[in-house]
Length: 208
Length: 208
DNA sequence: CGGCATCCGTGACGATACTG
DNA sequence: CAGTATCGTCACGGATGCCG
Image (cartoon, rainbow over all chains, first blue to last red; front, side):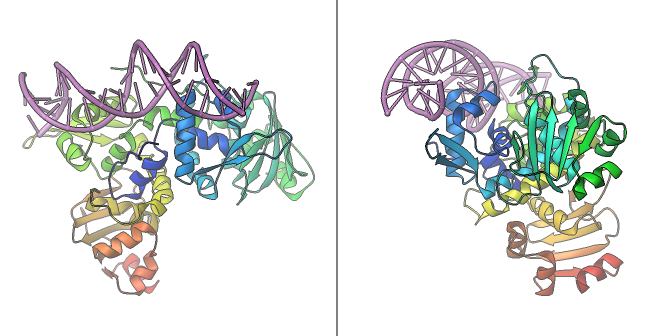
């Protein structure tokens, strides 16, 4: 276990970077915002990270109170990594980075990996934490716990209970939203994004 | 010039990290939020950064549109580095990191460097962008352009014009504010932070 | 097969010295 | 003052092996 490298500056931003400033760390946090993940899943959704770096980061993050390691109950016993409450508080950092990075996104390069739940971040920002929403894309579907105080912030697959609204959109629309070229209300109004459900949130979105 | 290393993920947060995720980059941004700086000043206020890494980062940041390099008019001709508008938009990223890092700050370690203008970040957050404020600490004084759309976000030395309020506090109070143990209104109410000036902002702060 | 640990080549980093 | 040059070290990325 390497003693943590520090910038040695009495400044809270540099202290944050001491903990989450290493390569891959914040992307691991982004993955774990989708809920508990096994080592192999993390490795599969983070192309390019080497096995030893991933293992080392997960150890460091556990030591620093950002993640915990837990054994799943049998059947299917395995270790999963998940964010602590402190780790989930990194969401605003990821969101600020994501907002700033929108103009850098541009067109998808052939070398770029894509995962369906990466579209959760821009949608989460657009929804500003107003309930449980299920989202369907060609790449797969996921759900958003917008405004959840505990537990995962979003997750793969269908919502764990009846969602407050369901969104259906195609990849082009998801990309335009991610790039900030299209707003949520504009996407709904032009029919590129369909809202179903009869809860108050679904109605509010359709009327917006 | 090295071709930029990328995570190659179609996600705006990872694109942001492609640009500002390298070691030292965001701390250079934090320094430049205080206004134009010469190479030597940056090197002096970032203890531990090596000269070649600093030079390399400044080149990369200029290439990526985060900073510009400008020659000061004589006398005192020298090159200064400053943030572009795009670079200044990184303030929310620094603020989110700073907010998250507050619990990590703890007591000052003997190896920690301190600079007066690093106290600008927590104060800027507390003031929420409500005018031009001059701050005096034992370590030195600086000013905040809270809510400035163009130009530096804060700066060393006195305010360039008559400020909307002046704050005087000691190091312990500044540290408590930076650690999040003390709120701005609480600091004012307990007399640990003195507000002078007769503008509306100064009055509002005294009455809060 | 999932979850690492080990090894190795390459590149990034940090310290010092040196130059226009 | 503003970097470039050099060099040792460490972090990273890729591959492979081990062990439950």
